[in-house]
Image 1 (cartoon, rainbow, N blue to C red):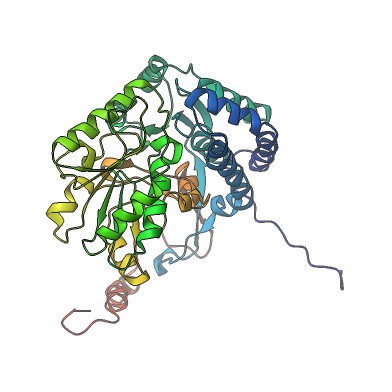
Image 2 (image 1 turned 45 degrees about the vertical axis):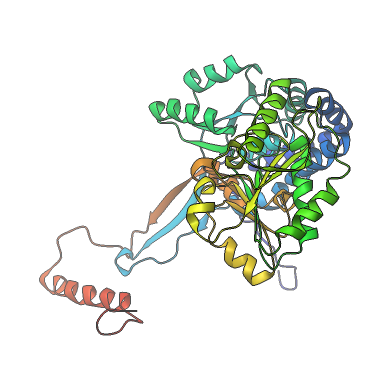
Length: 458
């Protein structure tokens, strides 16, 4: 009717994802339940993995709440079907669209060090992609993750659960029927899982320990670098996969950086690791580095209760420098510009932290094989719910979180629709039509060579 307000039609989510609107409503309900039960989750994290109250709230509960909000706001746009541009002339009468379809049944083996945030985001993305979800909670945080799964189910997000035991995880990988697996954990366990799944031809997303590093360039602020790296080292008692295991420092800034580290570590306090075996392994790694000539900047591996330990001049061949630990240990060495010295043990970090001024820091970061790079910070910026976490090489494979992680929980389906007229003839071409073929070939060849010189160079 003339003068009436225009009707803005909502572009629907592809029907290949069942009841998408219902899924959005369920994530909203879960967000409310998560906020209501935050204190109980924080208490359980403290009891099971010794996580301090503030850290449990700030690094587990709040990031998951933010992820819920992000997916409610952006998931429809990310998963909406799209038109396929660039149709060639000979496909006259054909329309192409790409839809997103669920993978099917997604299995998740949860980790314990961030027991709410990590598995929570994985469940939301698998669910929003239209999948059925099966979860194996960690045997080290069964009550925390048990409550979290209860909240998902109360919100209307149906889950299949397996017991929170190692044996149940092995049974899941070997015999359970699923179409994709998400695993977060050690490189050794990731390799074992990959072997089994290869035999079953089941794809996976593996987020593994990536021997992460920090680099302090000549233009860096040594005080800022020391504070950020100390924060990452002590976060979650040193049990954070994206925190640096080693720091490579330009020799011109090394004395100032070490002085700042000594200052910020002066009030270091004991850290309660997940178990005694983990603490003893950290002590052994530190003793080995000291025996190889490393200088202790902070901490004492002989202390009754483990505190953060920083060792400078740590030889690259040591286990500490190689990052084969999961605790509050840090190796420091001089940044060498020769790749053989610094790159070999650090080719595939999950995260790289670079400290320095803009152009220099970005230039260094561009040479890294890391999936995530933070400039003038550690760990904290990775909490953006839209940022992908991309593993590579020894840090695993696949992507989770953000746009790319949500897309990875679906598969693309190309759908073409051909009109009755006009359309490409199915019969052999007549003689006049066949004479057009060489002309079409020359036309496409000329389009492909646009912007090139006569000899074919760019």
